[in-house]
Image 1: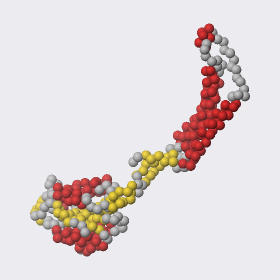
Image 2: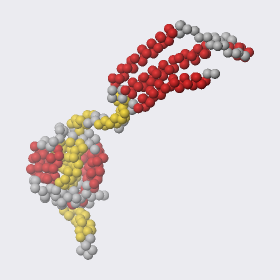
Image 3: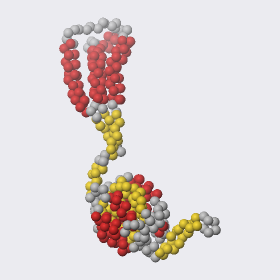
Amino acid sequence: MTPLPHLASPGWLLLLLALPLLAWLHHRRGGLGALTYSRLPAPAPQTRSSRIAGRGARPGAGRSRAGAVRLHLPFYARLAALACLVFALARPQLGYAWEESLTEGIDIQLVLDISGSMGAEDFQPKDRLTVAKQVVKEFIADRTGDRIGVTIFSGAAMTRAPLTTDRDMLASIVDAVEINSLPDGTAIGVALASAAARLKDSQAKTKVVVLVTDGANNAGAIDPISAAALCKGLGLKVYTIGVGSGGRVPVPLPMQDPVTGQTVIRRVLMNAPVDENLLRQIAGRTGGQFFRATDRDGLRRIFQSVDQLEKTPLQVKRYVRYREAFPPLVWAGLALLLLPLATAGLQVTAEP
């Protein structure tokens, strides 16, 4: 944020137009008054050296210049004081603002599967969810003009972030996503319906759901095809991304050790097929596309493709907080008003 200067009452600045007129009247009155009297300074005793130094100089020239300075100094001090007080009446302020601007953006709801199979370790060197989180954060960071929300799901769905432009908050929320934080299962229909509920009131021309999952729908009371029809009715595009290399993959699962009774993590070979047919139907019904990612680089390329989505203007509001800056001008004006009195006191004490 950059500081923004601002005048709360700029109409007072019209008083500054009177300053040149006051200066002209002062010098005109001072010139006429100089002819009404004469002042002969008392002769000071001179030595031989001072008489030699004074030869060729106009008598009283230095003293007359010093007198002119003393004559006009109080007036110009008062004039400067008036200028400071006028600026103070205009109430200068310093503000810090988020600039209002028109940017190109869309509304995107990211829907991320956190079921147990997302812990499969076939996206080396990490598991599927860890890699998906990293790629999603890169995607969020690149979409500077968009509002983005985050929904997580397994056997149930939960909105972790509504539509926002706060990139740091979104990155923190994605980092905090963990497997098994919701009931187990894969409720794709419920997740789509939850995302649609977040986007239905959006005023953006383009509204998009990006669904990232590695399984088949096996939970929830809402059928995925019905949820896709709901998204189509609301004008939402759904881009579906199926993640997983296919075949039997090692999945870490929490289990109870029969000897110690403690919960331990054991890796079990599991077959977690992606329901490509279902994901293609969802994307096709809503005008989106289906992608398949079998490794980290493939997932990154897919999100780069999604990054080429249609854009639409988005109005960003401007928030300003101002701080009053006129007190220094008031103190400067008072100091200038007192300056002639101080110089007069010094002159009196300096005279013999």
